[in-house]
Image (cartoon, rainbow, N blue to C red; front, top):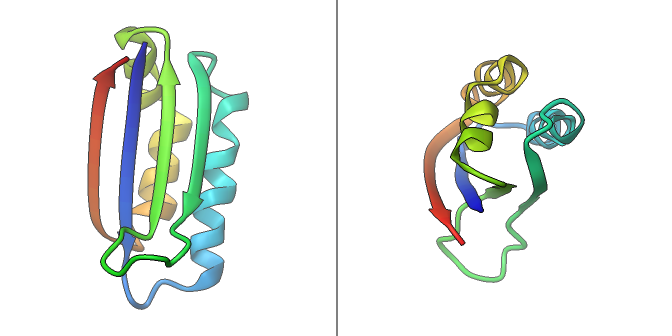
Length: 97
């Protein structure tokens, strides 16, 4: 299986509504992308200083499933329309487990 984890730090000017919209839009993807086996996300709970603001973890049966997710047009539109306008930093990793 392949696990994809991505972390975001939001820009200071990102509003609560914009942040919520990112989560709402991403929450649609399990109904759109058949290769998703598990999909979780959430905002940092603020326990430790210096953490990232938001995380997404997605699991796939194989690399082809991840690539289908990565390149999906709905997913790409969410990134372009909702994430990129408010993201200051992004980090990601894909690994087998």
